[in-house]
View 1 (cartoon, rainbow, N blue to C red):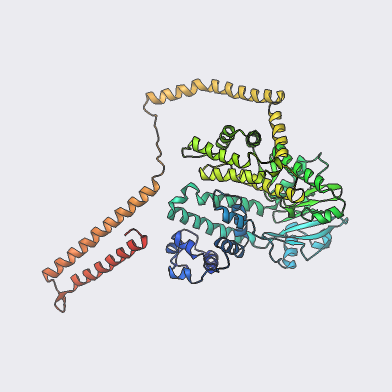
View 2 (cartoon, helix red, strand yellow):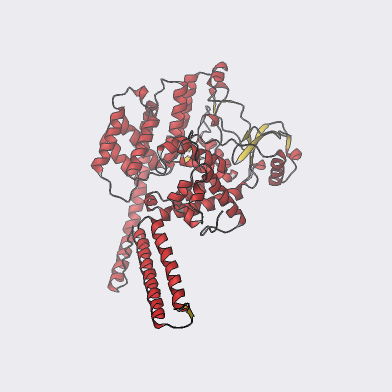
Length: 561
């Protein structure tokens, strides 16, 4: 299918995988994407080939994209899940569809799992465990989980990475990076998004998930944060049986929080569960700034005595202290219905290279506030508030720290779980409580003194370095060595179009010269002849005609005749 694939390495594996990806897109009626981005021209496909499959009328375009992503495998499924947190990159309708992406896939053979475990830990399975269940209790896109027992009888689970998954993911990342380059080049309107940076950020995330040592470190850090909190159980990691490709942890015998009927039968109090669960999540966010970024019901277990346990620590969020302060100030400003403060906090948190119309921005924030102004607190959905805030941020092309997308997703998820169990639960009250507590701690005399001491040290260092720095600048100015560099931005598209125009003008001049030269050959009647016409001149006319036809077709294809 592919004649040439640009800068992507021309290995058999890459070309074969590229064919698979394009075939799936075309199969699900997404050939228009390749047309819209002009990718089909770069890889040498005919336009008619892209539309040989008609899309199903019973499925929407967004549903077909989600199905295609699921068919493309683990890399694209993970990418879709990451994009489901990014309303600044994809439309909201597609975002909602991507939230449905399923990771459950058929398990790989048990003998492959056993072979990998033995190779990683350097001993036979029977020498390490007294029992190992070859049938996995869970199977996902990157790994599957087996139940086992240590020699002393301790119940454990062993998370085993899929064989050759890393090579598959690296191949897909190369192809995704290549497609991102093509999209950026062919669609200048994507400049404010920069698809290449989105792919690079995703590559960094998924490579971390492939290293189970990182997940083990996340578990240990999480455990230390909640060491003295008896409401939470964190699974123990057995390092001697853990590597980059396998992770051995304590078996958690609990009930998923989504199975509320069974929890009630077991004597659990739903309201207490909601209260404890939200407190634990908000404590992660406001106190430690290190939070579980995917607390969906399948990752939250309830044990006896209403104890909580979070599973799967592959995706965690890190909030800087100043980010937590911004979040706390945002919550307080919203609670107090302070529009100007709310708008200022959002602008301070985000970044943009464009000028923002402050009056228009405040008007949008005011409209957001008006939607919730007169609602009772129990009817205010903070997940909706945060999601609509992100919509405003996207509309004004602002760029919040990427961790905030994970934060919003985590808060939306936990509020959804809480409201499904206790419809009277008020998330805003809990958020305000933690926000006030955080801001109060910021003004603690000991913390203020520490902050002022740090500022004083930095100021003292600045004063000591200032004379030598000023002397160096003056010296460079006297000797004529001072240089100013100006880097204009936004001219890439202009330069590209200018090159196209110059090339076409040069091509037209060459074509005109060829026609004139051939005409002179004919008029001068230079032999040899073919039916009385000079052969050299005739060949020149034919060649010129072919070149003219090629130029005409290329102009028509560009749509700018």
